[in-house]
Image 1 (cartoon, one colour):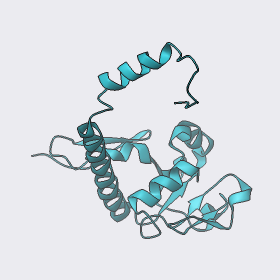
Image 2 (cartoon, helix red, strand yellow):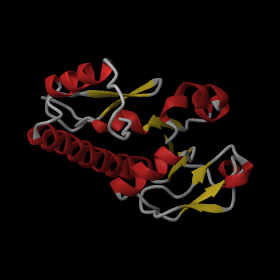
Image 3 (cartoon, helix red, strand yellow):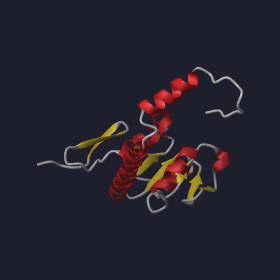
Length: 175
């Protein structure tokens, strides 16, 4: 929204946007309460799923350190208890830490001497390219997991499998 002094004509789009805001429920407090509840559920699911994956794979590292990942990891409270370090292609970020959670950022070379069981893709919008560009790691048995896929309740009784990149993994057996 753009605010200006009085005396100027109001563009015809303004009433349309205000109408849409009402129709979408943006003037209702419950809309924001429901949104907050959905976000909290995603946070719970991601933390539960990461704890499960950490127990399964042992060593886990992140891949990519975009600003959105920094925000997400800080909100989720994910630090070195889950991710040993973060691999980043941008050399300007090497030998730094992710702000707030203090996860070390390293070059891809670190994977040779400290091979993880799984890599958590933090630059989720580039997941396909990251997997494709790291096919040798996939071939070596390292599982790539997109953090975006962990927002669901993977331990739900109705779910038996979860797509974690190109592989499927049993997460709960139903009798």
